Amino acid sequence: MAIDFRRGKGREDPEINLIPFIDVLLVILIFLMVTTTYSKFTELHITLPTADAEKAADRPFEINVGVDAQNHYAINNAQVAYHDAAGLADDLKRIANEGGENRKDPVVIINADAAAAHQTVINILEAARLAGFERVTFASQSSGKK
Image (tube, rainbow, N blue to C red):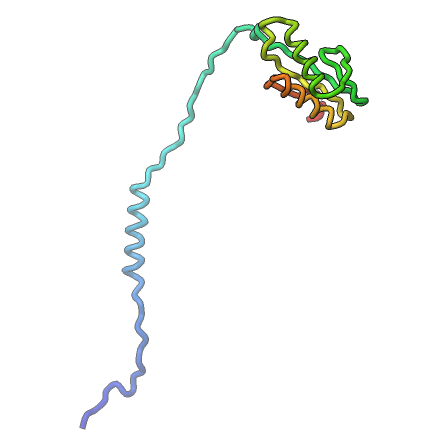
């Protein structure tokens, strides 16, 4: 007759022993803390050179084209009759050629009134393209608000 000694005992659930796991994590943490380099970011102290030079004397030739609120055109403060973009391009070339060799690549500055039609500015841009002038900029004034 066999006696069963396990009959009164209930079956125990297996436990995961966390102590070795925590020991391994602490060793890894200590290793990371020791091997990590803590370096401060250094700033570059630069002393920039100063220049006592005057402004460049060879400013490019500028052609100021203005448009008022009534869509009247003016080139260098002289009113011109606008017929089409080709006519305005001819006027731009004539103004550029009056100065000789140093005025071959002028800067066209567009001074358009805020109430001027958008098409008038497009007409000036088209005239500058037809005249072969690649440098075009717009004049504006600051609003005075900060």
